[in-house]
Image 1 (cartoon, helix red, strand yellow):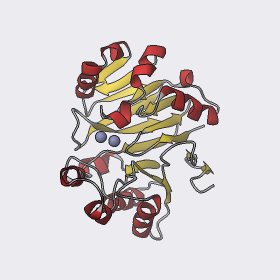
Image 2 (cartoon, rainbow, N blue to C red):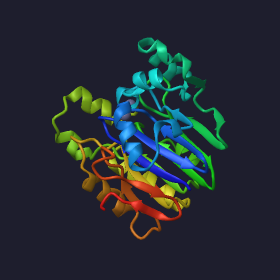
Image 3 (cartoon, rainbow, N blue to C red):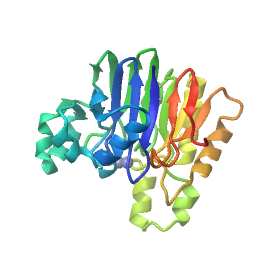
Image 4 (tube, rainbow, N blue to C red):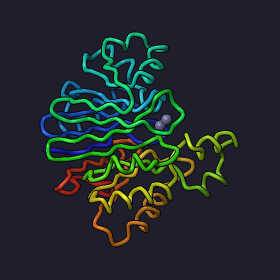
Length: 268
Ligand SMILES: [Zn+2]
Ligand SMILES: [Zn+2]
């Protein structure tokens, strides 16, 4: 049984479960351990069932629950050398859990092949992931200023792709953020716009992707409907289902079962 479960997505916290075969990986830990525990209960899982945690980078919205997590659990936490160094400055007690790798390295966890890919984002050594195994392939790409071709190529052929759809360019331009923040978000090391996401989704769908999950939506500079519309229009007529990862699991659960459609979609 394979599935993707979005625990939280967006600037206030990011966390998702990918289960393939008998291995369950948590991608990012941007929610409290308590919130993670109750989200997992919704899908009849508990934290102890997780095989490992994969971190994309050290920004607070991706590691919020880490301090409590390492205190309570011995589950391995995978991070690049750069991400780990940034985390250890503030959280030396995380060292016992950390498994280090260099961005771009490929490794195995519980029979799944995990490929990391360096991404353009303003963090120490951020990565996206491609996870193969158990008959499924996941591409997980958030917190990217733009989508380099090598990332697009790397997620080619994944049945499920989680892709950042952070902001609507016009909403960002006219929105409440101060100029320096607008420039950071728009910049090459910031976040992916809906339009860039739509282009990425089309390329993925052309390469065979059947499920695209729009993730890391800004709550000030985007809306689920705006993001959906933008990529839906671009995907017009293609054989690819589109979803939005909800801000919190409890709001509207998204559990995707590749090959079998959604068990419980955003609009249930
Ligand atoms: Zn970030
Ligand atoms: Zn983020």
